[in-house]
Length: 498
Image (cartoon, rainbow, N blue to C red; front, top):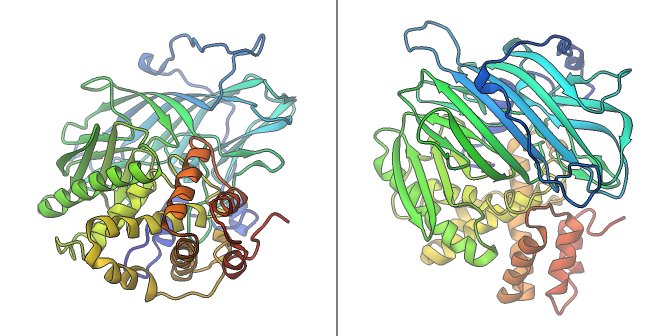
């Protein structure tokens, strides 16, 4: 997620629209979102029925084992005609999710993040089955999470599968599951596992007033999406469809899989072998071309600095969201960035496009606990903006430092969670921008080569996994001939493991 020049919190706006409940796990609204009835089942259309599953067995005997989560999803999106009154688009999903215990400890329950279930008046659950759920403790959905207690703990080397059928109506709202007159957005539209950390369990959290609370393990996706009634839209997605028309079929590996149906104009660009697609509203021709150009240049630069971009397509969509938002392979940019576009790099559209593209590394290639340690992706993505300006607009680096960082001072420690902030501006000033000054202090003390080598090693060591503060401290120190403890003490409450 990127901060723009407005002091209005994007999270306050769209969280209130999407979630409609308090930020705290045990708040008074907790009881107001009842657990849906999961006892019923329905017959599904033929195209939503899975073929027989043929996973590849690995070394574990008598067990189908996946080294990372797998989601096999068959979905149908029905879009009403424009003259259909107040009818909403309807998403019907049949999902099978697979998880293997790759850890050296037993797991007591299965947890999935299930954002579509949060708005109970728009959500309808048809059925849940799990091959090892407890008969005495049925699956429960509450506050955007699905929890399945096991009849026997999931031991190291064992796997579990879950089948889920649901429908979700899409309200007309500028949220990550919603629509407006210009596009339909499906952000976190399916159930997915949060990160699991040995010793700490599932990294699953309630939303906060600011920031992102969801965590994403690297996963495999097999998706079929059938769209009816959407002839006016172009399809944009995290992955490249294998088919040329609906039903659209995707094979994708990454953190998340987002879909946008848009009526905007397309601006294509190439960055080496990577196809960049930018979509911008009619009339924003210069902005759309700039989005594609900046994204392509960012991919080229960050691939050289951090490691190769892992996909063959990257999509940037101007959306109705009040801020930028990243998914793997696809990002959304606020329409508020376009009116002040200058065309010479001295504008937020350029900076935020570079920022959101950087999230393909600081979130995509390497994940982190976004709720408890948001600086691990946001400060690095913000600092990547500076690297972009140093490469392509070196005369504007002083402008960038002022417009993005120095006019928003903070003296707080950067290793705070999203729950430590009640307002957007202090969160941004601390986690993003003071995080930038911390990274720059490291660069000045270590030297540019050692600093960039550290960034690349963080990406290499954490590729397809996730990184922790201790990982970052260790890697930076390993590239420095001087102790970095003075910097850690200046910017962190908890500079080392306690």
